[in-house]
Image (tube, rainbow, N blue to C red; front, side, top):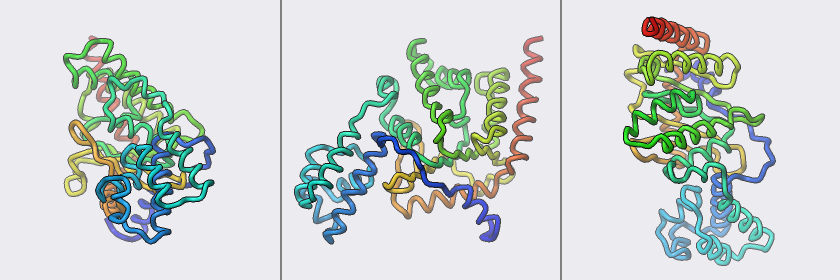
Length: 313
């Protein structure tokens, strides 16, 4: 991809506008705001991470994770830092409020028995993001899946699961999509490897309905869906999904989520974020334009509709 006007246009696709919502921070957002407040307090006192780590009886990496909001804050650690920094009462009260908000119950906790911690955190972060840019190479992104597509994925991935467990996992995924219906929903760019359209999850009828859903989301302007064709993806497409989240809430402004087989990485260092931002920009440059992407979706949809009709006959 060139560094001229096309690159500037692609970067604009990844930029964000500030979030004007005034609701109380969600737990994941509160963790990031709390960490940023503690980071500022440390820097104002010209202290290095190694100077502060002993205060919370931990390592430099532990205090770093706390400041980046990458791990749940422990009350004892936070209060020990407040005392060590000798923060004024108003700032101490602000930190205490954020600490309590990190403990707030949220809707997805009802599904704790079927949801790994790393996924729960992603769901919370999605709700607080102003923009989400994701790349998927195997399946339709979770925020854009139909119920039937979800059920097929869950059933195939967990062949021994009971019907009740499958239902709960599907309901969790479905409720996750509530953010698409809110007035302050994040702007979403979905970069889909062409293979996603060719992999018949659930069979032709399920795929036909799923692609119809993607077309509707694209036409309504809810999601900017871009297809990355096979012939352009070889040199730019990674072998794993990537999600880049941007925030406008006053905490660290960006975070990258990289999904692995049974876990995930959350990256917030500027060098790491820039590396993955470049990957996403390259994918954007290799992708079809929105109109051409919808045409590819329509072609795939017609192909599955014909196959579904043949099966019905």
